[in-house]
Image: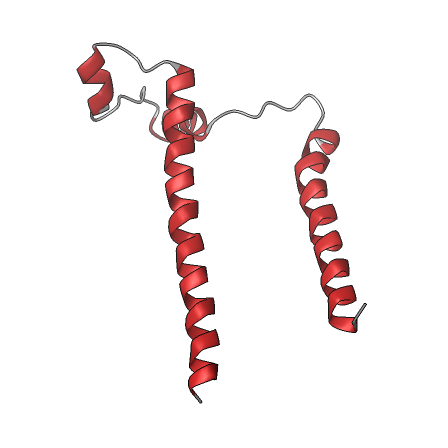
Length: 108
């Protein structure tokens, strides 16, 4: 096995371990902590700073359309679709840049 393959394998292994640690360590280090959403934290901060209850400026269009609050599962699904679209766009851009670099070297 060549040196570059060994170093790539080592790098991938290290990155996987670091990724797993980033996921697991917060749950171990902060046992019993509440992992609340940013909406709740923002509302509480507005209450503390202004002394008034936070009132939303508008209601989401989808909530107006269905006549009630969006179920959590649907909200998660919409978020996942949005994430997938973003990852697709970023992956396309990286692929385009990598291919452009490769073909520019071939032209020289």
